[in-house]
Amino acid sequence: MRQRSKQVISLALTWDGVRWPTKSLPPKARAFLRAKSAKLTTVSAQKATELFSQDEVIECRICWVPRLQGGPHVLSEPFMTPSGKRLSFTAKRMVRFGDMLGVVYLRD
Image 1 (cartoon, rainbow, N blue to C red):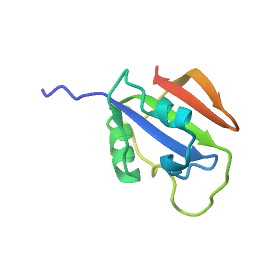
Image 2 (image 1 turned 30 degrees about the vertical axis):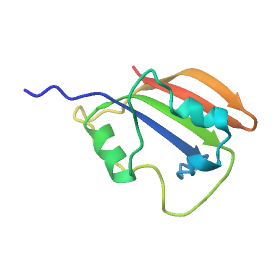
Image 3 (image 1 turned 90 degrees about the vertical axis):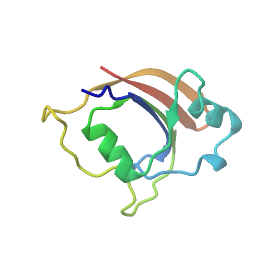
Image 4 (image 1 turned 180 degrees about the horizontal axis):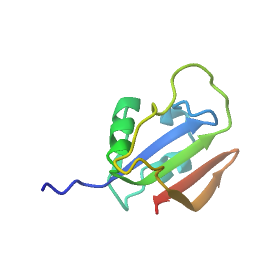
Protein backbone atom coordinates (compact mmCIF):
# COMPACT_ATOMS: atom_id res chain seq x y z
CA MET A 1 0.00 0.00 0.00
CA ARG A 2 1.36 3.40 -1.02
CA GLN A 3 1.99 5.87 1.82
CA ARG A 4 0.29 9.18 1.06
CA SER A 5 2.07 12.38 1.86
CA LYS A 6 0.24 14.65 4.26
CA GLN A 7 -0.36 18.15 2.98
CA VAL A 8 -0.34 21.64 4.44
CA ILE A 9 -2.77 23.99 2.71
CA SER A 10 -2.13 27.72 2.78
CA LEU A 11 -4.85 30.17 1.75
CA ALA A 12 -6.16 33.69 2.18
CA LEU A 13 -9.95 33.63 2.52
CA THR A 14 -12.76 36.09 3.07
CA TRP A 15 -15.20 35.44 5.91
CA ASP A 16 -17.55 33.64 3.52
CA GLY A 17 -14.82 31.31 2.23
CA VAL A 18 -13.92 33.00 -1.05
CA ARG A 19 -10.23 32.92 -2.03
CA TRP A 20 -8.42 36.24 -1.69
CA PRO A 21 -5.27 37.10 -3.70
CA THR A 22 -2.20 36.74 -1.50
CA LYS A 23 -0.47 39.54 -3.43
CA SER A 24 -2.80 42.02 -1.74
CA LEU A 25 -1.83 40.86 1.78
CA PRO A 26 0.71 42.72 3.91
CA PRO A 27 4.25 41.22 3.85
CA LYS A 28 3.95 39.66 7.32
CA ALA A 29 0.72 37.88 6.35
CA ARG A 30 2.34 36.51 3.18
CA ALA A 31 5.29 35.30 5.27
CA PHE A 32 2.86 33.58 7.67
CA LEU A 33 1.33 31.68 4.75
CA ARG A 34 4.80 30.71 3.45
CA ALA A 35 6.07 29.28 6.74
CA LYS A 36 9.19 27.20 6.17
CA SER A 37 8.24 24.50 8.69
CA ALA A 38 6.36 22.43 6.12
CA LYS A 39 5.60 22.06 2.43
CA LEU A 40 2.80 24.49 1.61
CA THR A 41 0.24 23.74 -1.05
CA THR A 42 -1.92 26.30 -2.81
CA VAL A 43 -4.76 24.39 -4.39
CA SER A 44 -7.86 24.81 -6.50
CA ALA A 45 -11.30 24.20 -4.95
CA GLN A 46 -11.46 20.83 -6.72
CA LYS A 47 -8.01 19.77 -5.43
CA ALA A 48 -8.88 20.96 -1.89
CA THR A 49 -12.03 18.84 -2.00
CA GLU A 50 -9.98 15.84 -3.13
CA LEU A 51 -7.32 16.30 -0.41
CA PHE A 52 -9.89 16.74 2.36
CA SER A 53 -12.02 13.80 1.20
CA GLN A 54 -8.94 11.54 1.22
CA ASP A 55 -7.94 12.86 4.68
CA GLU A 56 -4.55 14.02 3.40
CA VAL A 57 -4.54 17.49 5.01
CA ILE A 58 -2.75 17.75 8.36
CA GLU A 59 -2.53 21.53 8.61
CA CYS A 60 -4.36 24.55 7.23
CA ARG A 61 -2.78 27.99 7.38
CA ILE A 62 -5.54 30.50 6.75
CA CYS A 63 -5.29 34.26 6.61
CA TRP A 64 -8.84 35.51 7.20
CA VAL A 65 -9.53 38.76 5.32
CA PRO A 66 -12.39 40.84 6.81
CA ARG A 67 -14.52 41.01 3.67
CA LEU A 68 -17.64 39.36 2.31
CA GLN A 69 -17.12 38.56 -1.36
CA GLY A 70 -20.29 36.64 -2.17
CA GLY A 71 -20.87 34.50 -5.23
CA PRO A 72 -20.36 30.84 -6.03
CA HIS A 73 -16.55 30.72 -5.67
CA VAL A 74 -15.91 29.13 -2.30
CA LEU A 75 -12.99 27.01 -1.05
CA SER A 76 -14.43 23.56 -1.63
CA GLU A 77 -17.52 21.63 -2.49
CA PRO A 78 -19.27 19.09 -0.24
CA PHE A 79 -17.35 15.83 0.11
CA MET A 80 -17.51 12.54 1.97
CA THR A 81 -14.59 11.37 4.10
CA PRO A 82 -13.52 7.70 4.13
CA SER A 83 -15.01 7.29 7.62
CA GLY A 84 -18.18 9.21 6.78
CA LYS A 85 -17.49 11.61 9.66
CA ARG A 86 -16.38 15.21 9.88
CA LEU A 87 -12.68 16.04 9.88
CA SER A 88 -11.60 17.58 13.16
CA PHE A 89 -9.15 20.50 13.15
CA THR A 90 -8.11 22.60 16.13
CA ALA A 91 -6.90 26.20 15.98
CA LYS A 92 -3.38 26.02 17.44
CA ARG A 93 -1.99 29.48 16.73
CA MET A 94 -3.42 32.90 15.88
CA VAL A 95 -1.54 35.96 14.65
CA ARG A 96 -3.01 39.41 13.92
CA PHE A 97 -1.98 41.36 10.83
CA GLY A 98 -3.85 44.64 11.27
CA ASP A 99 -7.50 43.80 10.60
CA MET A 100 -6.62 40.31 9.29
CA LEU A 101 -6.19 37.16 11.33
CA GLY A 102 -3.79 34.32 10.53
CA VAL A 103 -4.77 30.95 12.02
CA VAL A 104 -2.93 27.63 12.00
CA TYR A 105 -5.39 24.74 12.17
CA LEU A 106 -3.97 21.27 12.95
CA ARG A 107 -5.69 17.96 12.30
CA ASP A 108 -6.76 16.22 15.52
